[in-house]
Length: 340
Ligand code: BMA
Image (tube, rainbow, N blue to C red; front, top):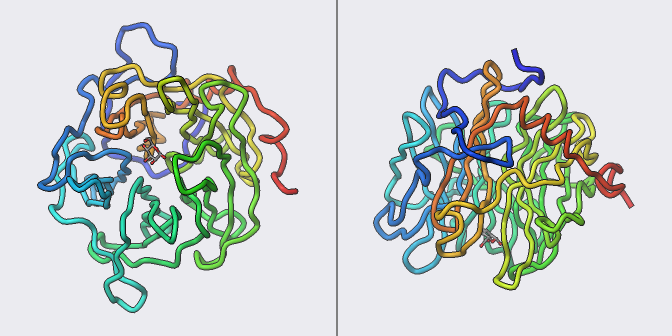
């Protein structure tokens, strides 16, 4: 029995490997056959990375960022029996509008996939006269209906919560600029209907810890636990050789998620392996999804590696939460309700 409970449906299976016997500074460890998706995975697609997966009908399904050979990213659907070995549909996802007519984004990247009640939502970044959030829903992974873009440009890294809070849908996002944004905090917004968004609050700032001192952004969908919403997010610092992206961990209040209860001063994952340090954009680990099993307390984190591959890391909820709590450093910006 875990010390902390994950509140989510039980999984009959999930990818898993126990911690290898090697020095580590983190409660997470990597799958020893990373990366799970290599180069040129689909005809016309050079790289898949920053992607999200979910259990579906006893197997796994995922939405994948596929960077085409012309450099434009779109979302591709993938299927897997074990969550590790993936086959991809050859064509990018086709979206329709509420009337059923074709409604394609110009580009689409960094998809997240979240189930709320009986519907699956894909949330991504796309062009809306500048980088902004796109969103679609599906119940069968055959028809993908776009809903109105939730926020004005410029915004990225939107992550929907897996259940409503106080009757509203809740989403994290990171207001940004149109380029390689050299700033950025995580905010939260609510909606009664996924159409109108408001009650905007500040959640957490880039911090004085150097690894996340430039900007931060939402990563995987929050995991509901007995201690609060466990989030894996990305934190970025600027070096003389460019940005470095690491994975951070925090726990948000279960009823008022704009309040940060604990925030780990240390990264949980930082580029250390060849597939994280070397690629189209070196030194990037970028979490977009988790699988979690309440019975065993196991968590699998899916993350993009160097804008070139997908990697998988594992941890136990007890060790992750204890590590975040033991190394927690919060500021007033984090713990306040986030209203000014
Ligand atoms: C961010 C996003 C991510 C990407 C990262 C590193 O701005 O575009 O998709 O992984 O930069 O290049």
